[in-house]
Amino acid sequence: MSKEILILSGSPRKYGNSSLLCGQFMKGATEAGHHVEMIHLADKRVRYCTGCYACEGTGKCVQDDDMADILEDMVTADVIVLATPVYFYTMCAQMKTVIDRTVPRYTEIAGKDFYFILTAADGKREALERTVEGFRGFTSCLDGANEKGIVYGTGAWKIGDIKTSQAMVQAHEMGKGA
Image: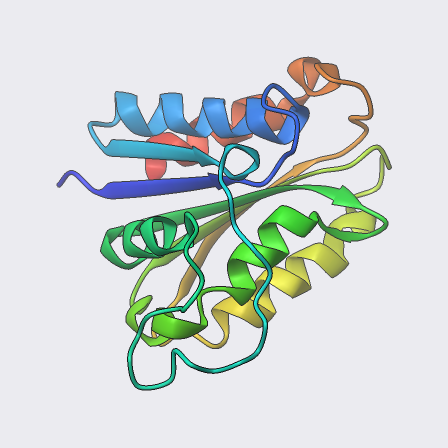
């Protein structure tokens, strides 16, 4: 059965290491017959949440930016991939901002499968665990969220470093199995 897969690529570098892994996940998922949309958050205008809670009860944020469309895509997807480079042992600002801005409709992001893709210069998988826990903090607020897999892209500092990593194969295989 074909699924609607949404990949949120948080990298500010369109061809950065986490984006390259997203491309591999997308390739695998497409080969498996799924419909895949990838959003490069760096190409979108998403302002920070102001904590005004004007969205309470309305399901709409008062800010006029690209987040409403991103959130609609999150609500309608069957599978969501959250991908980020790891900066100072946590997710990039672009990804955190999008997560914070789901408040108006986060209860509608229910029953989804989630995959996490992370890259870091550090060569140890443990260096990425704080970021994984950050993603899990988000998904723990979502009814029926299912963590399906994690790609750990370690030892990737410069653009393209990830190309020789086993993480490329893992991302492709996870995409095929989504």
